Image 1 (cartoon, one colour):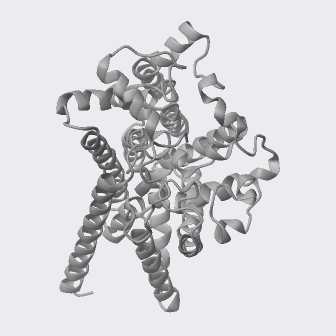
Image 2 (cartoon, helix red, strand yellow):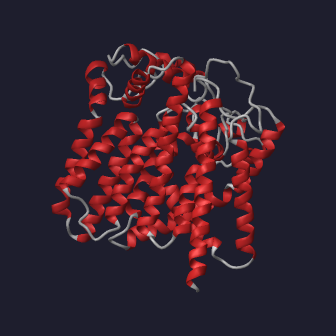
Image 3 (spheres, one colour):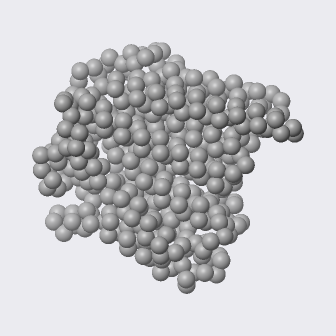
Length: 452
């Protein structure tokens, strides 16, 4: 292939990447400014917690408010930022926090690009596609517009995951004390942001142990792995120990301040809820649809690729339902690509001793298992949502991009059809999730917020 052709293709890829990044940033800035104040999952109560900390640094009891049971790092950091900027009004302060959350989301996309560039340095299109899959994932877009810790904990977990994946893909020993210290610190910060953060530490520890065992280096690797867990526990675990000492539990469940959730449907779960895939996913993509109430993966899929809980889009609007049908139908393509890529990743993790797949697969398995346990113990429709799986953004981008690039390199109608489908999907997502530009969302204008 002539060198000028290669240069031209690389130049075109870089241009496309910067155009996509510009669109993604513009969307997030627009949404941060125009999204309804204190709207979104727990936003009103997160803001109340932050405001409380701007007046006093004292850590409140878990039952002092809706969000005060959450680990405190995001709230303390937000309160410190508000004290520094000393904003002239509430609106500007909220926009600033939303923009910082959006920046954390952009970091996740950058980490996805970095992972592909390290493991496949000659595959620039795949790296660009990996970043785009994060930037234009609907749940990532609308969560970036909220005052929430979800994006932040996903970023911290992704940093840990990237560090482990790069090391496991190299010829270096699985872990050193210095490396383990840094991993423990960042993993501990993730744990101090949300309990989900513990999954990053467990995934890395299990991956390092497995690889060390296969390489015959288990005795040398175990002390640093244990040290990483100790560091993570010290940095992030003190909050849970404090709860246990003062209140008798590591993490609260069923607090009186959350009693309204106990009245929400369906109120119980069965095995069928985890295997049922209803047609309502495409015909009526709302979490309150009776069929979706009884479908964990259906409601999760709808909230990942659309807005099943209608925290961003209007409710009961035919046009929104139609565009939801379109997006959710086309989103089957990257979803299947992720599944196939993950299967390939599992095979590589089992077949080789040097592979980033070991830790990526470990995190996927632990997260999905934790999600099943969480939704079983909390059987309400508001707990079945894709935002709880944002920590999987890195493995999602890695495996989906690999499979999509493989398909896009096939000659003929398959490639053409895939390009058209993905282009339509991207256009629909950009139009739909640029807040109130295409779908004017007035069902919650000037309202104070929602509980969930």
